[in-house]
Image (cartoon, rainbow, N blue to C red; front, side, top):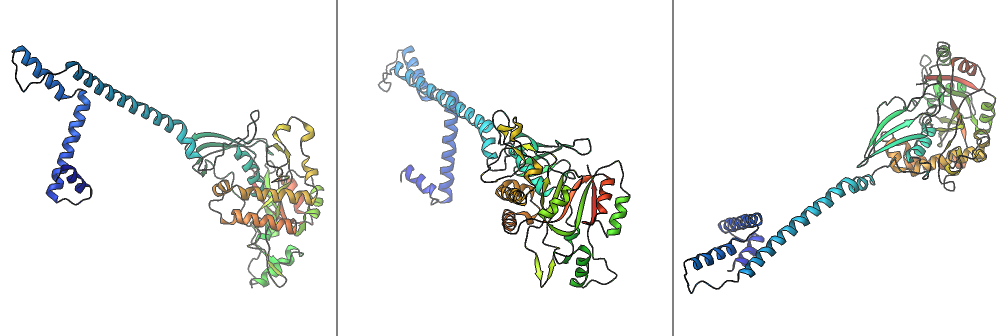
Length: 439
């Protein structure tokens, strides 16, 4: 059996234990010899020939076993081998250098492509805007009443890692509060989690009662007591503000020097046209309206509002607008403002009050907000990680419901002082108000 055949049997695992150990020993010896040759650069056998010839000439010995050696040929062979080793070293060095450059400059970008990229420029070369600025402008309008933001600064760190700062560009308190955080491969962490907290599910009274859509809250509370078989001595109004009397007492104890987000529960669910007429008569700052976005569960004439009206809506009279670029054909009337290239032309800016005065424009705006968010799968997965109610499918269904049924408003929020909130609470259209201090 030849040694080559022996190696084939070794590779296929067919050798006996003793033969396998012998082959492994031979392989280890061969590797050691190869390493030694590489370090020495010269071939020992050729050097031995030189030494043998020199010794023979010195002693004037001529032996038949000593052949005439072409010294120049052997030197050429040695030089060729050394050059080959040097070329190999240079090749390895070049490959290592290319690998280092790839890891340093290309790999971070490639890895980042698999995750949400908030730093992508959606503006132009003269006016850069981060993609997260637009995403946050839409998201905060839909889910964060009183906390709308439309400017996000992003620092890319590579490998899907980013430092972010969500800027506040408008304030009702006289002070601006920026929120910093980081995004690590699609995971968002704010350094202050309290600023962008969503409102509790029961900040509006319609989040915890049942009844008929055309009824007042008091009438629906009676239905609720009957619907859920609530005892006479048990409270049925589970709104965060408590009862109407408790809500009024809380308003009277507010600090006159501070500003508050007021969550105003309407006494009756209104159409958008009726609601807009009501709001336009008030002297209010930015108003966000809470919209019914899903078909309500019905049992005969009784509607269960409790699990069917999430706190979701849009700003119906923005206190400010912005220049953010978007696809107008795909998302018509997405945001009040103008295209970035037209920001220097006052005639191109939308009039927020006029733009959202009609129900058709408001409906188009709200549907575009929902459709846009449903298309931002990576962003939405990051923002709604712990909330399965706002998946892309759910948002698409909400948009379809609004297109079909129009806008019905059950409450609204505004930022106001104590005096304004007390004035609102006395109006017949308002049932009660829950408040949070503006931070």
